[in-house]
Image (cartoon, rainbow, N blue to C red; front, side):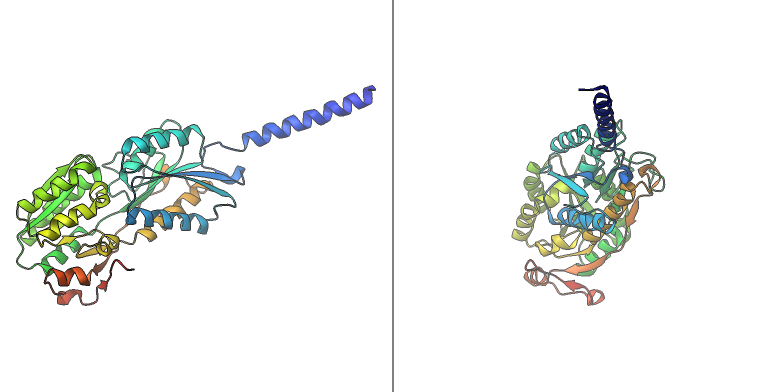
Length: 339
């Protein structure tokens, strides 16, 4: 091989090495800035399987697509369901960080907390959804200025509207039973606010706390044995994930159960002031898209609160309990399990 050929080959190899290094630096940075790469990977941790969280995920994918990121084209989603176990969420989040994902999403408070715990040192962006009180959860410093690597959407339950609905359906009721998970910040926060509102509507709140899903059945029976006039659900993941157990105990005693969103009403609750969780997820996806494009940073991006609600009721459940639709709710939407 003559000197000219050797020099030519050396030059070609050098260019290839530089190109390879440049390509390697442009992928898997985990910085959340997709401007330097045509492909992004988003990890999604959903805390449990129930319809409202499923709706959040559906909306999240819609929002990402509207924001310019579509699965199979420039987006890969690694979805993990924690099956109601925070330890599973912790493990999934750590795995996603180790793989340098561009962004991680936590659906529901425990999943968001897992994502934040795994990323607060790496700085990987986290966008959460269906987190009712992210400040109490310790994942943002404030709603207006998160100040951490986390931001997202909060499902602020319309608790006073819910209480007005309960009073309208049950004008003579005295007690409302509440099941809640003692370790879920959103449930603790909701309970505190609900108890404060109860004084204005002549209700007494009877609460029973649980620490895990296995305790829900016994807790529901305890509420029934205390003779509560009705049960009200929040967006507590352990309770909602075991809604059929709660409904069985309540139905046997002819006690109405009020849900926190439309899917619970479809599945057997009497009524609810319902938040649109698909819309909530969509807003979250749009926020994530801005971060992936480098147009915003989580620490500066205010948490979006979704406060709008609409009344829904289950006509079959209402009739089975011998109740009638209150006049003030004549425009409420009737839903059923068939929808």
